[in-house]
Length: 420
Ligand SMILES: [Zn+2]
Image 1 (tube, helix red, strand yellow):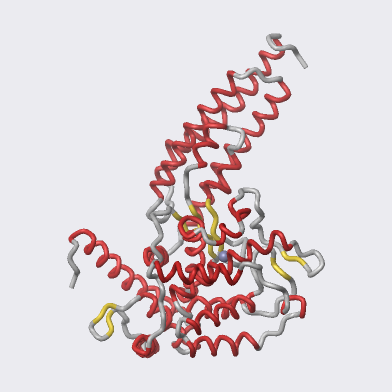
Image 2 (cartoon, rainbow, N blue to C red):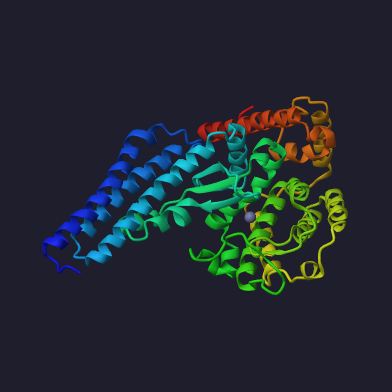
């Protein structure tokens, strides 16, 4: 290795500085010239652009500090390679997000906003992204889990991202096309709510807060099943199922059943078997007064037979306490959606209207509730539910119901007077 201060070391220093400057200039051009015009969908696109601009500044200041540090030429070359790689990945991640938010329908954003407001979510920025690589929807904090690991060797950038949030709900093309399946995203908003606001599962499984804890999807047989990893994950999934069911009724369970109930042969590290989830969901529906739906769901669930080791596997040890806490919190936060006979008849009426493709904006002179509308879709005839025109009709209804609801709410807070 050439000694510091030798002509060779000066040359190498110039080389690695040059390599880093190259990528930072490219990234800077991207930030200045392309980013302002990237069609990132959703109301938080400007917020994300700001994060990326600030991140660029923080990367630059970290790099300036590094340049002033005396490093051996080996370390400097490895570091410069890592920085180039990390800056490129930050950039590609944003391009990937932009590209895959482009065809998210506006109605889907309305839908998630509507559910999110109802669940009392704080203003936590989120994006919805289409993905082709997974078959189930998921949620991740992009700042914490995706971008921050890229800048782990750039202190200012790393510290900056530690305090930023930008959730990404990723979903599949088939869910995007079917508004009835949007009910599956209630569970995804519940993930954000649990992590940011409720923090119930974290009390029992603090390891879930660690950035190193595995949330990656993999399957295992009975003998190789990593209980330590699976149980906190399963508890989290059960909690989000409960939040969805208590706050929105049977529709989440039904969409889970229609899409994912099958004869599973392996255990998942991240999710309990769908049959076991539906058993818990049915019990919760029963408790919330949805007896008919609970029985129907049980009958359909019991038809699926699983291998004994899956059928009999114990649920996480704190499941009961977690469910209890979610129940009392839901009551406290006033987000329960319990079935009454009046509600049942309203939902039936809406189901009839959907079957005739009649608008469902008001019923009996009252504005239609989004949850009623979603639950009514389960009463639409099966052949209708498979029809793309019906799906498009549902998307329109969702948009009108949510838009009216949001308008009323905002008017209400603006004037403090009820809107007639
Ligand atoms: Zn989940």
